[in-house]
Image (tube, rainbow, N blue to C red; front, side, top):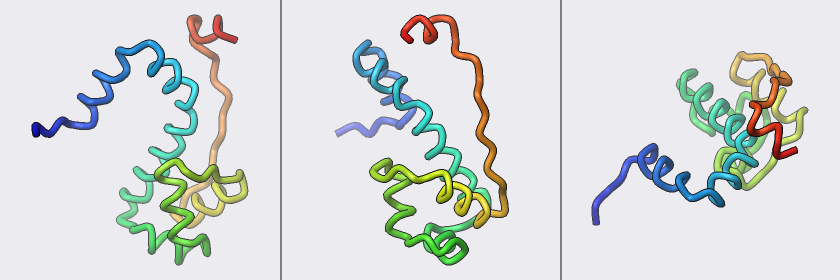
Length: 102
């Protein structure tokens, strides 16, 4: 069985319009998850380290990172603080095509 890189798999999978629509609907969640993982790793922290710094269980951190738990705003603030960061949420204009879907 040939191994495929995640980015190549993602590119191939998103060709399907139904998959692309579903992915786009969850893009905000994916962005938050990826930002959390990237920040944690850039801080050379394991999930266990982040758990100790925040008081959030390692299991909950794992669930957030794999997309099976939606964190509250308060939890996101705690996670950011545990990584020595502050949380910033912003509203950005929709792209024209995306705006048409609303």
